[in-house]
View 1 (cartoon, rainbow, N blue to C red):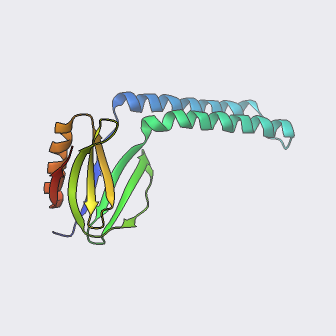
View 2: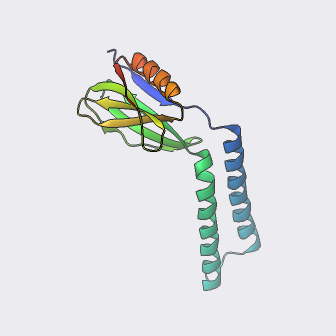
View 3: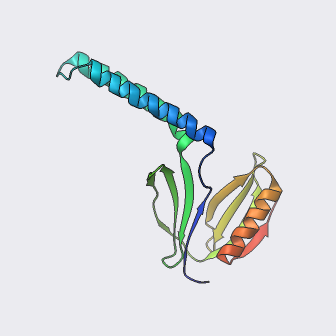
Length: 158
């Protein structure tokens, strides 16, 4: 196999998800701006407690916004034999590189929630969950295409 880097990404989130997350982030910025415009900074217990209430509310808003804006991609560095699952929101992201042995196969199977998973397996039987589909045919097509692109074998399981 040619030494190359592969990024498996599912593109941008839907317009509805991006719009909904933008609304939550806008509310966050608006509430934060209102707090600092209406409250002069002072070293008092009352100010500190109101600031903690603001932080609590901001964390709740982040909890609503993140599921609509968080995306995941899978990065493989075949020249260094490394893999990472990269979580990102816009330009900000996080992922930790892990070493893997030689990749063995791409497989699909039906899990307990009746979803069809596409996984990449290495020779030590470590599983890298790549995608989940509602229809088995979609998962098989995606798995075959993925196996062909990274030049490993494909196994279909139900």
